[in-house]
Image 1 (tube, rainbow, N blue to C red):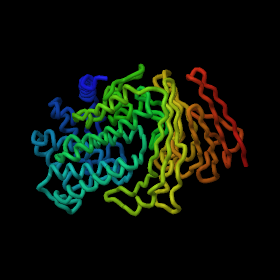
Image 2 (image 1 turned 135 degrees about the vertical axis):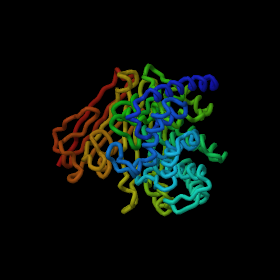
Image 3 (image 1 turned 90 degrees about the vertical axis):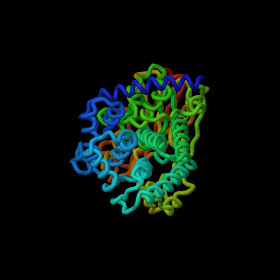
Image 4 (image 1 turned 60 degrees about the vertical axis):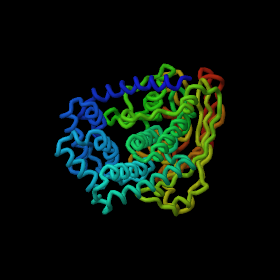
Length: 470
């Protein structure tokens, strides 16, 4: 493996991603991802600055899609940091005033407290305070120096906690990608050499974490926080094109190149394009020089969503200390099979217990070499979608927690004990990828699905049966 050659090849993919973003429709550029790149390259400057100012006026104008502006305001903040550090002095006075107002008077911390938002809030606070070092942050009632010191202490403890226990949104095809964007931004602009090194090390670990559960960049097995489009198709893991979001598959192709005849996404996140980070040699060796088959066993801490918000709540973190999610993945030349083989229960009345199985992909068989990554098999109880479609037709088991799963090299077993109201399915089925109708009623039914794998997908046999009903 030639590490220098791989890095040089990635530079060409970087230019390809740059060109794709420069050619994109500005009307779809809600967070100014492409506008930032246009301004960095001096392309369509007037139009790009107008688009970026629209993002800087995030709190002063209606949300582009009608959502609460306090939700993803930190996504806007993270991207606007590039404007501060790359071309602030080249902007018009009006645009600079919008940026100053956004960072110095508006609360750019998201109302959401999930892991990626927590880290994003810390990094934005630190880098904004580093840039506006002689200013007062009106929204926080603090000097820039105080904001910086608080944010640095927060980031150090956050990353130390993750390094010791794993990420809560474990192997998330979307949110681990956002974590990479956040860490790339920190890596690019922090003046603290220790933080820069720490950001690079965490990106290495996140990529390694993805690679060991992947083949050809297709991220298999179990995932925390997955969305339907990802669950149904590994090779197209990014969100709708209008949002210009990257994904774990996107990052794999960006850093290591597309493999196995799967498509190469033409884009990645703006933060990665503008960063000079490239994975360490050991990461590249694992990506390219693995021998098959192998088993990957992981232990992740039981996530406490409110432990890290604007500040760290140590009492809540202690409440789940020692509790875990145990994850297994088998990877061979022809398929990947993996799942959550055990998950501890939250302590009774714990404030974080609502997060159990939140948007979680419990198990999956990924068959390689068919339909651009679409050959995937998993089972799921559709539940009741409710808030933000968290427990929907394809992902998540929040509030219901009806499934028990186990995977080993060539066998997966799923058992469902679907309770009565309020989370029983409106129609009676548990399904894989396509719906499998069951003969028993939806209420209090138990479903068991067993299948055995031979050496390749062409010899796979499947069977399913219902066992028990009330």
